[in-house]
Length: 428
Image (cartoon, rainbow, N blue to C red; front, side):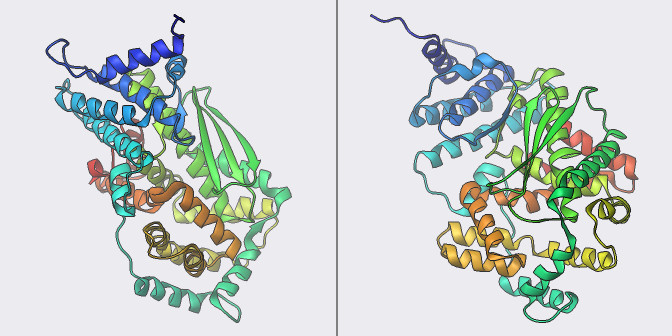
């Protein structure tokens, strides 16, 4: 008889330690044991979906388990949920237990979907992200388009005028690196004024193509990130601060760094050593990264910095900058149109071509750019709610706690949230 491989032994030990619920033979799990099981469960799901594990910086040997059948993983997830529910948390760890339970419930729902369970858009967003996007009808969205129609200069269709107007603010490819480097450096300086990051924290910046996203942060652990910017389509000047803050400071890079520093290294809470992309943690991650832009730069400071530093670096004229920012502010009110389009498309209410047409209408972008966005929806599905709804939930949560406090208080509350995560329902 052949000897068992180390990987198979590891898998069998995982199944025994993380799925045995016979309490008559063994004492209940502790939160630390449940956390380890959650990490191993997440890594196992990653064998079935290449994008599920967005970041991992736990023990390397936990990666070694062989691929486990989805039916087995679903059983293990159910058993782990039962174990977590029965745990009596130590004082001060009640929120830890609640979030671990919500994360594990989401993992079980994701396994079910991989195993053929059909969820509607709203059911999926609730199960994976602990939230449902508010509804906007097309009449409300059309009224915003009517306002834009009076603001955008030129003649002809609104979409054509918008594309032509925005072309005045595109960063030439040979100037992208200088502009993005300046934007990230400024975001970093502003963030480190209020948030104590590791002395060795750092990042690398790469420019890539052929992606469905515009920017991505690949957190590698030890306060180091690889930040990638997609150059498939022209990038406008306002996206420099957006992406610098969202992907870097005080966005994804800072969020992951603080979780690793305070929760994994500081408290030994290993559940935070893995970041499952399709999980409730993503609403906080994307929402805080978007809200973090205005934490780092209030509107006046941002416009001043972009006009004084980024416009010259990009070789752009500032004559129409004020109108540009006014238009962008109104455009923000159309952000939930993307959720509406995703819901209708994924629920089968409209076909792909109609989805692209609607995306063109409400984003006022080209067919090619709108097609890219629909491709993002096809890959990430209900994940799209995390950007706008996540931003609104995080903003409301932080500003309620800040009250009449000033900028320093806002940074403190924001940092506390990143260091002690909450899901959507826990912030409402």
